[in-house]
Image 1: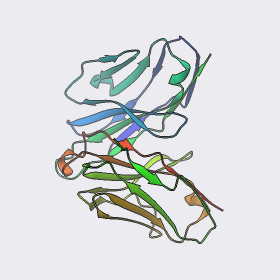
Image 2: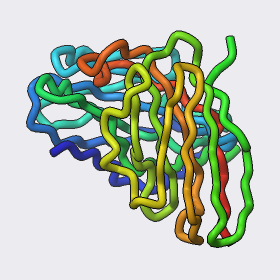
Image 3: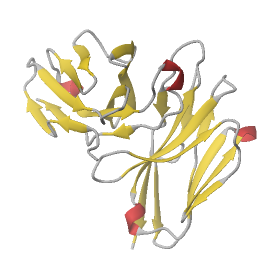
Image 4: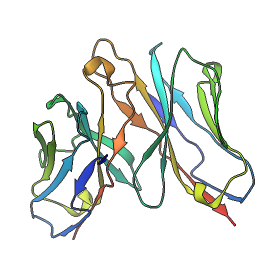
Length: 117
Length: 119
């Protein structure tokens, strides 16, 4: 069975600090996909990144970076030099390839990030 | 390009009434998902469709909930009769996944959600 754990319920930091959001997943499949989504105060979830299980290369996009480590089943998300606009709820998600049946994306419980000016 | 469109944005109803939530996916998308978000349970997948066919409805809470997708551009989620515990934000999402085999790796595009309050 698939499971996503985001142990940090809420994080609050001062603007310009770096912050890391943790994500730990469980799956029995060898082929799976990991995602991060952002839910700003407006409510609509927005896709940030997708990684497949065969690509452990870390990724950087501007102030955002992602660290995928299969050895620890983690897919952590770091925001460098945080800004007030980064305030949102961030969700980590997992889907299994499910060759024998259709798969589905399940979400962690989310981490509410507040950036204080 | 228009994103996923949901209506209404807000719905307030009384217990026992029928509620219908509507969703228009992004044109060209082949898969549609209904999620429910609450503080207690987070984001729950209720049901999803691929090419207008329901693939997995194991997340639908009970028989009071039903969903249809009569064509590629429209889906409804109906609750009859509604109860206070159904109060939540209901999200519709769509993806490009052409078939069941590709459902896993396609990113989701979410609508703005419907805030449902059942009194």
